[in-house]
Image (cartoon, rainbow, N blue to C red; front, side, top):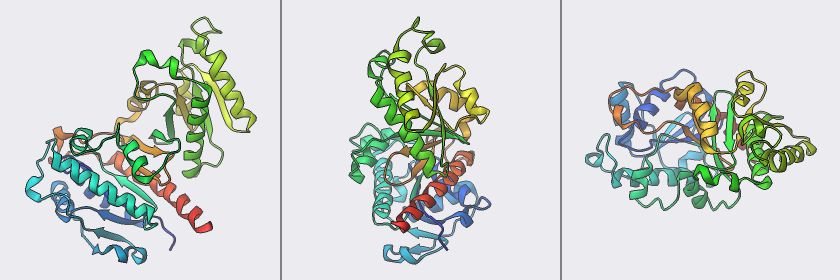
Length: 336
């Protein structure tokens, strides 16, 4: 059977991650869609099962057994002691556990033992206290994997994908940081990610920077001087790209199914739309990295941790998307 293999890590031990994964594993169709390796301490998975009130059996294997396994396996780690897990608390121990589980999952991907990685929500504060030493987990993963190419966070909601030209910078700096190469990189990233998810000719809309797409230069010339030439350059390459469209209406095209992705100019331009449309179903993909890696878009939700209140919808969406991307990755690797 040529099913993809997905590594799953519990995320921050103090958050809702272990509970979410216990719920995911008990969802219909999950275990039929992929072979799954739970990477992390046995007591974390057991704690998640107890929090969710659902069974999670641990078929513990050694790493050398992973190439031949099928179904559900557990690779045991020793990253945190049971008495160091403090529910709803940011801690160095929790951050250390998160990073060690993430590192091991990436090791498995680099060794060809898994085709994709699903991580439950991480806590940046905990990871930073434990030595993250990067702006975010995406840059940390790129550095760990030795990847120096272009990569960026991609946000997904159902069949809508968004990425952005600028990200974690102040709004007053956005216009100065938009250029044609940056737009081309963002469009290409969206296109390549959609292809990995099974869309062979994705339709991509580019959002304008200024109100009314600049209104023929009345509200700024970025659309005329930068965005329109970038769109034309993609069209010249036979890419299905249109725009720039006014940002207050471009997501209507996505909702109607006219486009598969929207490339925005700055962080909140896309994030507000996606989160309003379906916060509990959103997924974040580490776009551009050599291996499919994703997570539910929400956080560790310390306010409900340990209370069996966590909604598994976004985690299921993340798993489904990763299975599609991992299958493509596996097929490409087999054909190479």
